[in-house]
Image (tube, rainbow, N blue to C red; front, side, top):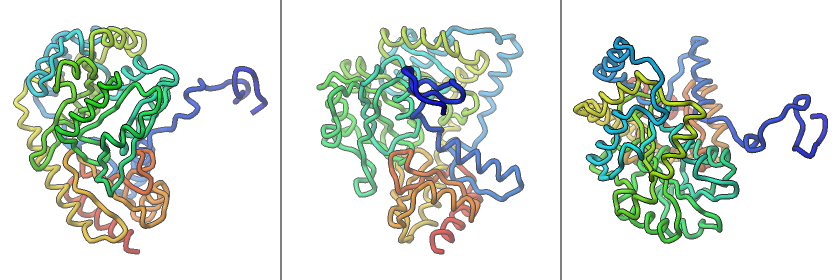
Length: 400
């Protein structure tokens, strides 16, 4: 650093970052998984309990649809908001499965649900706006809010509360300037699925204050033990007009590398989100969208097969880690994650994850970036063999 200027701190010989980027941290999930991958390339026997994606392959009929599109020459630029045929299929899916009435003009298909969410936050939020985010939360939520110049406001819930916030928690956090409530159910990283009654209360809270609801529903199909997924926008016309629904194909169809997601929203916002996307990434991959179209028209039988496998793995992990005195676990109702409360150990979650990887060659994700210091996120999106070995090593680590 050479000094200060009226334009902000001068770094790197006068070159500097945008002010909003200075407080943005790299994704903790990407950092740990990258280090685990580096060790594996070196020949180390690393067990990955950090994965944020299904370990299943994309179903063949989806891949074949994309191959067919390639062979037919569907390799040109598509509409910035996504292929009309796909947006029509998304609208039909939302009506059929979620009781959400959106037209194709209200849907923007993006390069993953992450970009869909990013686009919405950048267009919707302004400098100084407050965004209420129930914690635990996905690591990218607060960073996206900061990149928009807005202020993330975490609404905490811990192990003792079952990682579930209440309306009373929201009321205590609803500072002046709170414009957006960001909900994620089923929740990454806790596996919590909010009940219909809870969703009704959250929606009423937001509507009374004129707030917009962003509902991230990307794990909607990964549910266990008969719990129900409820889309906030399905509760009433008023709720629909105040809600942006985020979803995608990555988790449900094991299509993470395809990078396809979507946002469904009021027309006034959809026009602006599509305009922003037209000047950034343009439309998503054309031939991949034909794969997504096939996914929406499929029977969905492979989804249930994956969910059954996740449930078996969840139960296996809980059984293997049960009885530990220095790690508390709650049974997830959805997703393929669970949180381990290690606060009794008095160790920073980053230090815990780094030492576990160094000593036992097991990768987990620190909880601090998820808004839950003193926790780690464990993923059971892996084979039963890896799960068995990974939990064995984790128990050894915790007991020694």
